[in-house]
Amino acid sequence: MPLISGDGPDQDQPAKIGESKRQVGAKLSWPTSPSARSRLGSERKRTGNDVAEPSLEDWERQDQTVIAQYYEQTALDFFRIINEYFTQANAVTILYKQCVESHARWRFWMIIAMGILAVINVCAALDLTNQQWWGGLPRVLNVIAAVYAGCLTVAGNVESFLNWSEKAIGFREARDLLLNRYREYRSKWVCYVDAYGKTPNACMNAGRLYRQLVESDQELQQKLKTVMQRPDQPGKPAGGH
Image (cartoon, rainbow, N blue to C red):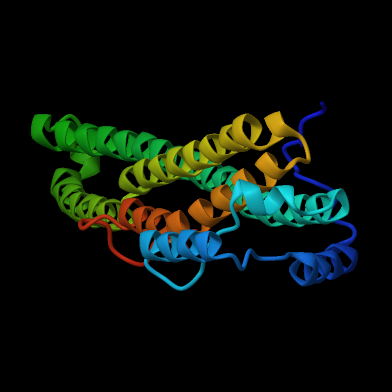
């Protein structure tokens, strides 16, 4: 049985699939026997709301057309979410690389600037240019060194404000969170849905996996905000949503 690709099912027919989903809702038949009603009550109590999930027994009473339509719609919705995680992981990877490159470039030029300041201080201290034709150049060098040192201090404060290194760490952790969530639910779909084909078991597992994915999304977004805006990092989290 072929597996669903990383891009999920065909997304070029949303109207048809949406219509199919309405047909699924219309065709699903719910048990009305006392034992079935008791089971539904237990399910509602377990989930803490008035919505009961269809059981394997319920799905086995549906015809193959309904099962196929539900499978396609659930797969479409499921992969739309996890593929968004993959896209976001690629986006924060780009931001991570940009921060690393900016930090490295800034540090390189700061090292060069500190070296120039050291040369100016050495020249002024050793009086190497104190020749008759240079006049009071050593005093000028001292003034230049003082102003130059002040500029370097400002540049260092700017670097601390931009905080490229901390931002890079946040983007790297965000990438790991997004990729881990994508891989986790992609593997669950393969193991618990694809393995059964378009069968009642697959539909039951697909519905449960989709519900788990939606419920865990808020927790993931909160973690992303935490790692992308650290206490010592000013400003709003870049790339957040």
